[in-house]
Picture 1 (tube, helix red, strand yellow):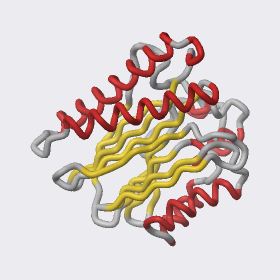
Picture 2 (cartoon, rainbow, N blue to C red):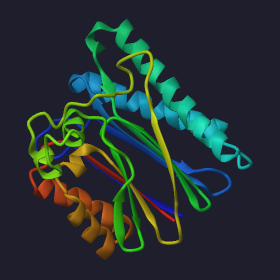
Picture 3 (tube, rainbow, N blue to C red):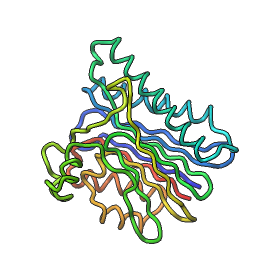
Length: 242
């Protein structure tokens, strides 16, 4: 397996509040985390970097090759919940950080299975068999409106409330996390990204980039395309290639 990543502050923002971390376990399984912070320039950066660090440490310290699928799911949940509590406590103890939070997307790929967990609107896609599929469902105001039939997917992409999320790590002492699993085969790609990518590069463009490019070229092309379309937000892309 191979992992490639890029993060960029975009064309408008003065700082980058996205954070990502990735690596490999001793048995060759891969892991990756993407967080997109919120709560002002300082708060957003603190929330995302704190969450990524806490989750990374928990995963690398607790993963064992003999773990069952349910044990992996539980490990990911515990790592995210630990990060949630840590960010929440920091926000309560420092008045300048009140209200900070972050999205989170975590992927572990072991053998022929990808384990996915997320909260917020950072996404995970699967590119497989010449098809691109979104594996996560945004926890956002516009997604609720889409689900109700009040907006189309295209309308949601440009809606003025598209950046309002309904779940975020660190905002409350408890966090609901969505989990899913999917089979992965040789040459399949898991793409983790912040909404700075998904809001500026549509699924068809993502598909074309992943079809035509690979490795570092693909993640750089994704970032460049988001910036070419306005780059109104920080943008992060991580690919886990089996």
